[in-house]
Length: 73
Image 1 (cartoon, one colour):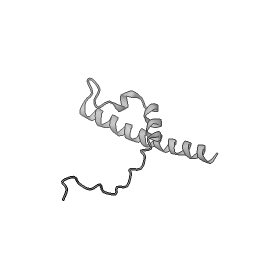
Image 2: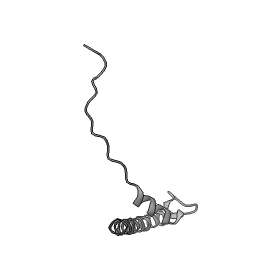
Image 3: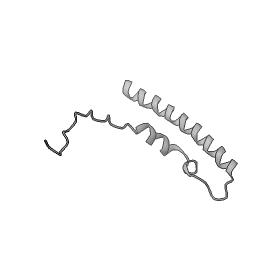
Image 4: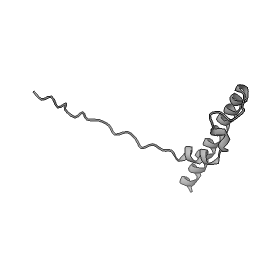
């Protein structure tokens, strides 16, 4: 009997695909990615974060369309 565990047959993790996220983040205004801005109220922060989420969704969709066109061209 050995105290060294047998290696399990593991499936490798698929590669992370971050191109769409990189595309979106480079096109967002830096203020939208901040946790809180100086002098910002709670309501202003929540509104900014909601707007940032909407903008991120739009940019991710735009990236998907752009990358799909690049692949099909």
